[in-house]
Length: 153
Image (cartoon, rainbow, N blue to C red):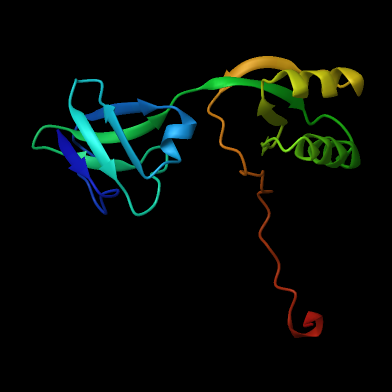
């Protein structure tokens, strides 16, 4: 078993990539074990959780990256007024559930409480699977603007 304490600062991108696939909740942990697609076993004792895509180990012939499993989610189109999207985000958050905003859709865990809420609000949704990374919020492609000294508190 190989022991890992964190992501590698640099790895040779020309080496073939071997994935170690894990669930989102495992990826959030600092202590865990996993087996890569080639059967290599790893023990993780991390200062901070790894992020999907991190390279955490390499050999002379390959580099190992952590990949998150897709999971069941409900997707709601953001083809609605911004106030409706904000209200929906608030309602899902009020259930103490996590949310991911993308440029064209909101993702929430596919749980009965979310389905009941969306049905009650008459919000159409689609059941699907996706790499769910709650707390990620869509950002516009426009640059942020400095408010300058006149907006200091």
